[in-house]
Amino acid sequence: MWFRTLPLTNAERRFYRQVLNVGRTRYVLRSVLFFGGAMFTIMTFAKPLFHHSPVDFASVVIGLIVWPIAGWSFGVAMWGKAERMERRDLR
Image (cartoon, rainbow, N blue to C red):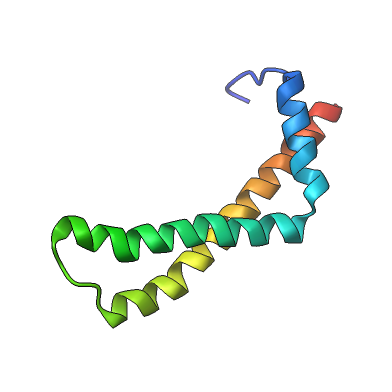
């Protein structure tokens, strides 16, 4: 590797173990709900308030498709990171 990885601190170890103890499915579903839901709300309803434009039906439908997929992707990526960090810590 071109960079040196530092050993995990105790707080980081506890955090990654806590993430892994939740379980993959539950963790990813939480990410869909919280990340995808928050982004949907902000981008669909709050953003038009700042641009003084109305919320149209198309943006709501597109947001309902795009943001849950983004939440799922975020959850899967963070789960993979937690697994990698746990494996790295075991070495």
